[in-house]
Image 1 (tube, rainbow, N blue to C red):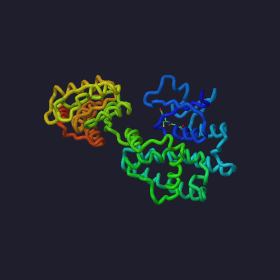
Image 2 (image 1 turned 30 degrees about the vertical axis):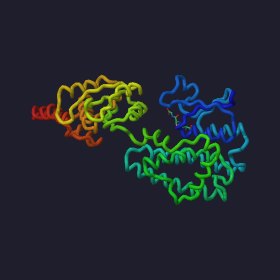
Image 3 (image 1 turned 120 degrees about the vertical axis):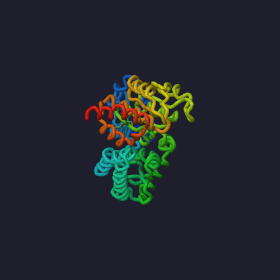
Image 4 (image 1 turned 90 degrees about the vertical axis):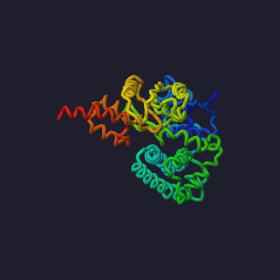
Length: 365
Ligand SMILES: N[C@@H](CCC(=O)N[C@@H](CS)C(=O)NCC(=O)O)C(=O)O
């Protein structure tokens, strides 16, 4: 039986760190892959925070990647992954803390933020952190070597590296490549990427681009906690919708529209989503179908992803349903449409507004 069991997820950079430490030390371990979207029952009995990584060593359980890594370094001391001198050990811990409290935060902010202004600020923040690593870390501590502390790999290298293996996703979604002016950092990334341990579990660029799509490229506009709106969906996006926590899909396209996915219902259901198809014309208002669509928004499990071809009909229905459910005023509907960039002139929505708001305004005046 393996000495260590690690509960991990391939996509997770924190678990990646601890797997690298296990490999660098040549520890015999068993890896249990956890599907984070569908965690096994009772997982919190193993992982109190419900997160990966966690290791089991006999009766001992350790969680939090940075703590796991130090535990492994103490229990399996060869080769040592912390410098010998207390002052350098303190330095190493300062950098591990920097990774955990500052660097990862800026990195995720840039990747996850949907707002271009926030992305700009996050990119600036991340750039200054890279500069800090280059000048205060690598230039001062690496000497002639390529690793953080010179010629020997340490916990600091393995702590940061997983985010650098995933840099292609940042480049793809945010156009933020690793700045070429940080030459030490470039050299460091290359040296670490060539370690046997790193190569043994490296994933290709495409893997990260695909897996990070759900954070970096939201497929839908959120109109309320219950309703979001999208244009046409690929089969992969249907699966992403399920991963993002949607419970059902309402398709407003007619089966004879070009590009209608004939097996969308089966695919949605296979991904665990409830499904309804209520065809709505895109150019003419249609009271009966609109009512049916609104009824579907009431009956389907929430949150619902409503979609059509370009998102206009879906936007109209989502706004009508939200207006009814939340009792919105005309001004509030206008405001919401503006916030999420939806078109108020969509025919079904126009008809609803005319019937409900103009009439009301007339009786009030
Ligand atoms: N501070 C933790 C972070 C671990 C973490 O956030 N893991 C994520 C995957 S990358 C997770 O398990 N998320 C599942 C969840 O939060 O439900 C560590 O260093 O181990």
